[in-house]
Image (cartoon, rainbow, N blue to C red; front, side):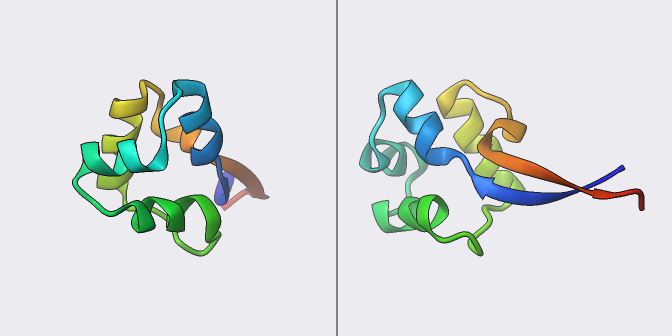
Amino acid sequence: MAYQVGRCLLRERLQNAKMSQLELAAKLGVTRQQINKYVNDPPTVMTLQVAKNISTILHCSIEDLYEWVEVGDK
């Protein structure tokens, strides 16, 4: 089974955590604009390191940060 990264779910995870993009940016040591790119720009996929740090801050798994689209067996 193979999967492809789908839509970023960071906006929803932030809402669930009652945290703003600015607050997450401050905790990560990046700009709010960088967080906004993950939220709004589908081609901007976060690195594994960033995803791990965000998932730790938001108390979720890395898999919870994106929709995963099944693309078949590979």
